[in-house]
Image (tube, rainbow, N blue to C red; front, top):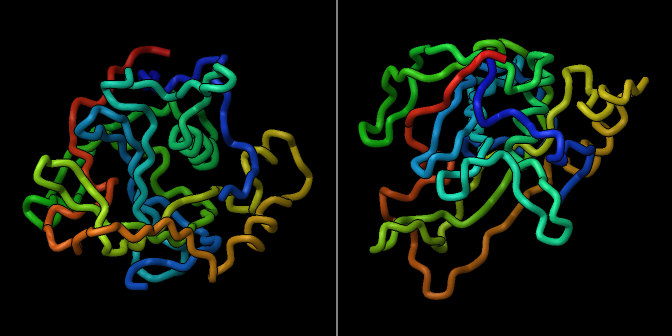
Length: 252
């Protein structure tokens, strides 16, 4: 069994190298040992396949870290899991697909495309009802209950609202959120180090030193003449996704 659209072609370059890159219910940046409460596939309104994760800090409080990783492009771009580098002409795996692959390897020791989704009913927040409701999803049960060491970033950006044309535009209100920046095996090894059969986990310490609790990935930019986000339509991008037809499965 394989998940159509998630197979990685041999000529697509992955991006899982060990690089550092560039209040309320939000956690400070840092490393957190976590377990997976929920893992399921979904599709955005534009047709992009996503992996949706609810993660809980082991021996922590009850705050969940929720992450949506886009595994493919949308319908208008062909639902591809890669993009073409304009300078080199090479195929590069989408960042969300690359992160999803690393997570799958750590949690299940399998390629993501070889996982078997199962139809499950879980409680998810409905933005129309403004409450949780039982929702049928394509659950990746092999991931659920497994442990992973997560490198989180605390992020700040512009809150967005819908304009008169129904498009999301930035406002002068700020939105704080957490974003998964790097993932490791529970013992601190990265996927790159594990693949190289490294004897010692090194990169996790480099990551910890650069992204301590004081680090904030701040991309907020004042909007000239921008209004405050008073609209109830102001949603994080990950919350705009809607359930749709997911995928076709065929034998491996």
